[in-house]
Length: 347
Image (cartoon, rainbow, N blue to C red; front, top):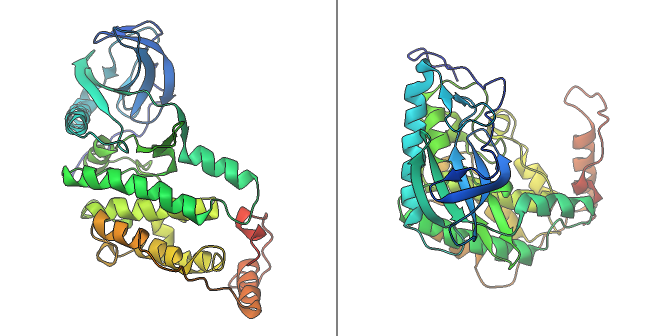
């Protein structure tokens, strides 16, 4: 979003910064290989002094810095230096805050340090796969349910326990999505890859390419003056539950504001998932932040509410109307489109 009061910053470097080479020594750790790279940094598998595996995240925003293969130091152009330092400070503070949190559902920061004119976070190395990996695998099976409701409730009970601790430490995650919920081989759900530094850079720099994940980012994240709080992370939790039910992300917030289709999409799941779970997603994903749960505790109470679950099946006429609405555009033209996973559902 343009900001006439500040100079525009270039969006992304043409070439991504090169990761550190294998066997590079940083802070007493030896890099084994790159695990992943995103717009804000690189994650490495490394070994500590006792040859125990750790994951190390390096602050290296591709929009602000470059690095040549084999080099240690990132190169930052003078006009981007103040923004780079601001992100660096936020990343360091994030490491400091996370190091104080000890919870099975929050990634453990074992160490954090400055070196090579950047910052590194040392974390537990987790074995497993992301929730996004599980959703893609489940969706490929084309079953009526992407996940069983009991699985969804159990998984997000764990996630919310961790998120509640994060909020109690006056932190927000700000990038909750299936790719940032890690399911370990011993069946723990762990929140990873916090987005505090990302949010600081989004607010302070004029980046045309979004620094949040469409579909999971709450409407207030699209506005510079948007008030962020626990309700912002709760919107993303609702979107993650939606993805577990549908097999794909919801429409992003700007599209929803322009034309709201969430109720219709959730209505197709009636009879497949309980009314209670559908209503919970609707509550979490309210476009108005004040209409959402204002705390994780309030959401936990609803998610764990005991009692018989209510199911409402679609009538034949309702199903016919939905099918017609999906296949015919507002001007009456027939729309040809590929089948989606949720169209295999037959209440």
